[in-house]
Image (cartoon, rainbow, N blue to C red; front, side, top):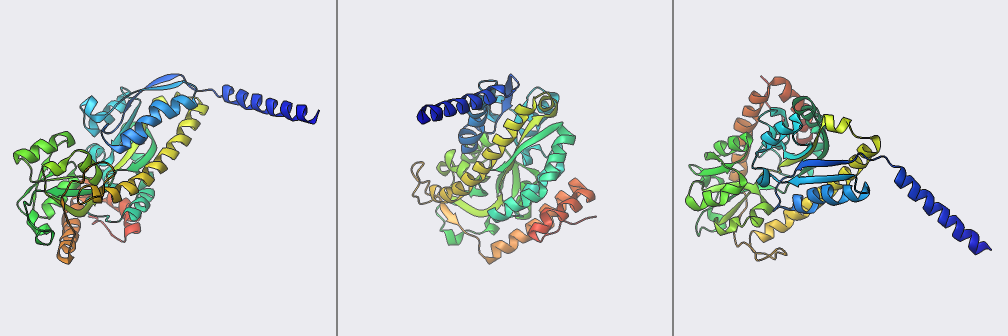
Amino acid sequence: MKRLIAVGAITTLLTSLSGLAQAADFTQKEWQVVGTWASLENYKQHENPFWTKTLSELSDGAITANMKDYTNVGMSGFETMRLLKLGTFDAVHALTSYTAQDAPALEGIDLAGVIQDFGKYREAMAAYKPVIERELKEKFNAKMLMLYTFPKQQFFCNFGSADATDVHLKDLEGRKLRTYSASIGDFIEGLGGSAVTLPFAEVVPALQKGVADCGATGVMPAYNAKWYQVVTHNVRVNIGFAATFLAVNQNTWDSLTPDTQKLMTEEAAKVEDAIWESTEALNAEAALCNTTGPCSKGEPGGMVAVELNDDDKARVEVAVNDFVLKRWAKRCGSDCAMEWNDSIGKVLGVQAPVE
């Protein structure tokens, strides 16, 4: 009799839980979504599964997604965000640096050369998060659901057979270096180089043809895209970390039921944490994959690792203070610079000039 009662209680509990799940009111919708790059870990391991698997399964099929990456849509970050604002896309994953053309304050989290430490970077991002949320809402009519990053951004150059100890940042003077943001362009000029703006997909042929001597990108993206086939050295100055957000059109968001909003908010927070954790691991693995190995992803790239000496670090400081911070503060304005000083600046102990 006791056993029958126990079985009955369990059955009642399971029925109750099932009823609760079925009672959740999810908005039936096929989302139009743009992710980052399908060849890279963030898209493959986190962005795409979030939209095409996790949300669909947890909403019992109510949430589905037609998802494309940057390469598929053939647009830059600011173009996809403009279409998000218009409602053409429901959700977009975009780099802050790619979007800064329409909102200079967004670039404040990834000012080239300013942050060299990954742990400090997450602290800085947390301090600056309210600014990013506000800019997305005011400039793009968007709600931010995630704020995460790509691996370290560094330089990859052709220095022939030179030993690591024979290559320094002064050797970038007069060279053409690929950039993808105004801030990195300022940093390159501060080091004496010439900035060449190129989309990620065009960098390898540009390096092959001599259109660029060096490229700036993430350490693992460089390996995945086989940059080691066209460059010889990995210059390990941390340019930035490529802050990335997930933004949802505000009108779309407002049309969702509370259950749908709750589900998406909670699951987005889990993905955000997972990306931070995996990115830290990728930073370490990429350092080996690009150079001597071992590398779980394939054959090591064989690049020569160039570490910074004291003179190199002094050059970085000059480029950051006299070029990056000064020019960005002018682009963004005094109020923007003061806001940066009160958030990221306090975390780092650095101040942007305010006119």
